[in-house]
Structures are given as structure tokens and as C-alpha cells.
Image: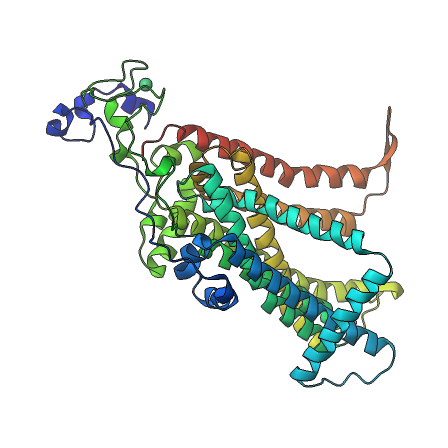
Length: 492
Ligand SMILES: [Zn+2]
């Protein structure tokens, strides 16, 4: 709503005159839809359900979350055990390779038997060397980290239930989602075992690990995208209409009146004034593709965007928006990395040919594949995951560690994630500028500072350049704050 609109007589505002004569209702329906009817899974069948959930996470999520702690911990225990056994196989292979035993790949049955033997041996040696307290501390730290991650998930998975229920659901889903670690660990170990040679394998194993992480995160988000359980919590209670500026209770006020407390027209606080952004309203992938950039552009104008944003519905769509932003940043950084490598291979070769230290060896075809395809994919995946982690962290902090209105604040931070494109572009430009300064210009002089003493000009320039993307990231918090402020009393 612009300032000009604020000054208009109420009769000129968008609703029809008939609507304006009505009084504000005493009660508005709850913001959350009715929960899914959840059918808990019996703990003995939990591993089977966990495997099925890897394929249908959205459909099975509410049922898994509603199953008891025993089922969740059972899946967690089995998954962690399989991961340890797989890593034991990996250690065994490394040992065989280093001790010159021909590392031919045995059959699956043999692998499992050897791995189990190794796990038992590992357990015995741990007990023998008295390392049990260390292992205990390690396990405690791991489980403690899970509890923290579950807290960080609260703003992303909130569904209007009470705080305690939400936390319990996040922990249970996190325990169930440890099943996603199994496949990536096996893939990761297989890449290492099959490809052997350390130098060329590194990018492949990094890609395998990052892809596994991305897959796990996406399963986790989809597991929590629907809520099944008791409809208790702030989101399931009917509510009264409040002024969106001052939170004054507007019940029984005439719609054409102004708020008695702050003078804001009542119509501006009606739930109908808020709507889902075009990206969230789109029903098909094509629709989302068409509306993504306009929504992204609109979201950069934080306050204007947030004044019309419906914050109590469309949370799955908001999360999808954040994931799309991360994917876009990942794709852009992968392409930039690829172009950069091509530039370095063509321009760099010319320059380095005079430099004995950097003389280029003839690069093999696998080397090119690794440099031009695998490394950019690893870089893009890493960037996308980093942006997602930063968004998650921001949502966690913005919702006071998940304790204050996590549903609304999580949604707002998801839409604010579009801003992350700015620091990403700035850091790419900063990288280019740093390269130009250090490699092309190569400043050598130094400046004397009163306290610090002599500082290289190159270091000063580098710090100035790096400060630009960091400033962009810090301004992001202001962006989030403006959006949170404009939605603090939102009625829809
Ligand atoms: Zn007011």
C-alpha cells in the first residue's frame, strides 16, 4: 500500500461499496487446513517404510512423523549401522590397496561378510583399547548435533502446531531421514573403490558426497511438507481480525471505518488483501518457470512485496521458491566455473608456458572431463547447498531459534532468499577482480599504518574487494527484517 493510497477516502479503495457496509466478523476461521489423517507405522516395519519413503516422501511423511519414537530410533539405528559397515568396507579396501594385496572386487555376499567381520573387529579393538568413553562422547555429540539441526528445521517445517509438537515432529523426521544417508554412502564408497586413483577421483567423490547431501535435504523437506496429527496449536484456532499496523482488535468495526487506534483503513487489514505470489499460485512446472523471475524481482522490493504476501498458507511453495533460488545460484556458479576453466586453459597456457614452475603437462581426456564437467558440477552443488544452509540458518535466527512464530518467519525468509543472488553475483565479480589485481596488475608496494605497520597494497585491495559481497550478505538481514516487519500482524 503506497502512502498515496493511505490518504484516499476509504470509499475509493478496492472493495465494492456493499462490502464496506458490513461489519468485521467476530471470528475468522483457522489459518491451517485440516491435518492429514495419519496412520502410525509399527516399529518392526519401520525400515521397510523408510525405504518406501525415499521414493514417496511427501505421501508417507505425515504417517512417519506420527509413528512413535521407537520406530524413528529403530530406523536411525539401522541406517547408522549400515553406514558404518559401508565405511568399514571402504577402510578395508584402502588397507588392501596400501598393503599391495590385489584389490579385486569380491561378490556382494563376501563384501557384507568381510564388512561385518571388520565391524566386529573394530568394536573389539575399541573395547580393548579402552576407547569406549571416546566413542560414547562421539555418539553423544552426533545425537546432540541432530537435536540442533531439528531446531533449525522448525521454521522450515512448521505447520501451525504447538512448539513442543513441532520440535518432536522435526526430530522424528530427522531420525527417519538418516535412511537417506545409506545410498549416498554406498555410492561414495563405490566411486572411491572403483575409480581407485586418488588425484582424479577427488572431484567425483566430492560430487557423490554433495549430491547425496542434496538428495537427503530434499527428501527431508518433502517428508515434512504435510502435517498429520492432532489439530492443536495456534494455526488451528479461530482468530479475530487485528489491525495490521498496531494489532488493535477490529472485531465489529465497520469495514469502511478506520482503525480507532492508528487510523489505518480497516479494509487494508482484511485477509483478502493478501495473496500468494504468482510463483506459489502457479499449478504446473511451466507456470512456475514463467512466474519465477517476476516473483524473484518483486521479492527484492521487500516491504512492498511483504505487504501483499499471504504468510499463513503456501509454505510448501515458499520452500520450493527458496530451493529454486539455490538451484539458480548453483547453476550460475557451475557455468561460471566452467567458463573460468576454459579461460584459464586457453589464456593461462599462453602465460604459463614462460614459467617453468607452472609448465602445463599435456592434459588427458579424463582430465578435461574432470576439469570442465565434474569440477563445475561440484562447485555448483556446493554453492547451492551453502546458500540453502545460510537460508536455513537465517530462518532459524529470525524465528528466535525456532521458538517464535516459526511458520510465518520461515515462509518470509524463504521468499527473502531471492536476495542471496546479489551477494553471489558480487562474490563472482570479486573473484574476477581479485584475479585481475593479483595476476595481471600485481601490485608490490606497501603502506605504513600507525598501529599495524607495513601492509601490502595487494592485501588492502583484496580486503576491500572481499568486503563487497560480505556487505551484500549483511544487507540481506535488513531485507529479511523489513519483510518480517511488514508481515508481523498479517491476517492471512
Ligand atoms: Zn491500527
